[in-house]
Image (cartoon, rainbow, N blue to C red; front, side, top):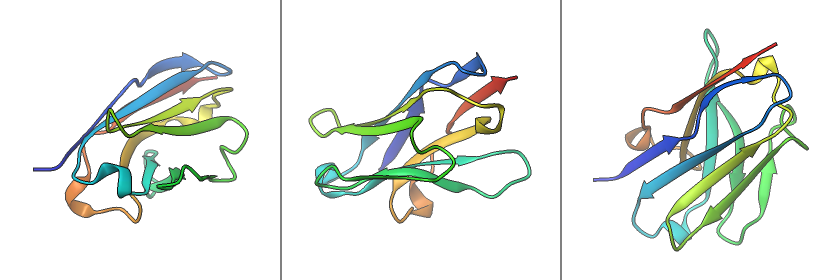
Length: 115
């Protein structure tokens, strides 16, 4: 059974930082493009960043220059370093493969940024 377990969320003031982790019990993890997604209240879930098998990264315009995605294939873990957090970054953050599989959504981790 595939499990993606997110952690590292919390409450921070604007300008602060958080580092999210996603531990994946996922076969052939090193061969999967992984992504971080988020869903704010009343909004659709959106892709925040993704990292390819070769380590190439891409970011949504709204987080470019502030967020950094990385992966550790040996630990089957994906990270999201979030700096200069803004109020509008408040959301539940999820990891998943890209494109996402409906079977892999976990509980997510809440990030709350106060202005």
